[in-house]
Length: 322
Image 1 (cartoon, helix red, strand yellow):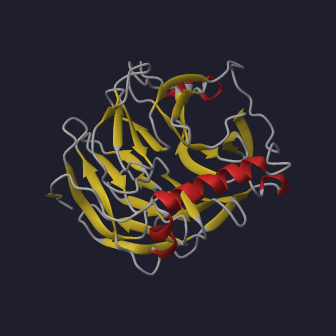
Image 2 (image 1 turned 180 degrees about the vertical axis):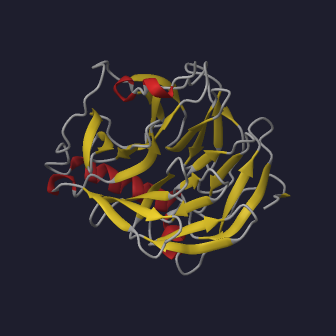
């Protein structure tokens, strides 16, 4: 779809109280006795501790890195998109309030796609009233345009190799799809309480995190969306783990950020192991994509506290640029 340029305007609606309630719910989950520490540790090449590399003054909902090594962050409360040019530099507000931001991805042409409607109201009604927009944001000027509309409240966003975009609505069950020619299907597939989402490198599988009720990782065949497969279920101790964002490493293995579990999980051989523990209220993880800045092979984590960490234990040597 060719975006239609629109002014940089705020999406109306009061969200602050609903989001505050969500933050309290996450904090309450954190304090629940016996929260998840069940996933065994993954084999890693280092035991180095996480290192804070950036901070935004808000709940950092999602992060993505472009080919120039710049990180982009969606801010939950203010509705802004921030750009961070390199580790240790101050975040630049790229936009004003463009909505209750959800996921963010970088297209091959460098343009950003940002989900809106990730507040409690739109999340709970998104299946029956798909009125949220997927916005295109210029990474340099901050110009905002509408890429697609008619989707449920957008939490997760994933980009397939052919340009197809997939979205999740965490308060419902619908997985949305936008094809490269602009066709929108707000209910392409169904997974209860879908959250993080990613697409396999060959585009044949869509991975979706079920965040609550019975947390699990699903695989949906791109050519058979009516038959999602519950691929990896969490253990009994992880029932309140609240898995959130999802990314893939260079081998196509899913990694999952968690809120209450305090772990970053990796899927290996049909089960989950912990790349890192002690990282509570994590929202998303992503790998760098450059030889400088937020660089290739390094794993980065965002959180409710707005802090961005590099996770050395999640480093992906095969993902490094030559």
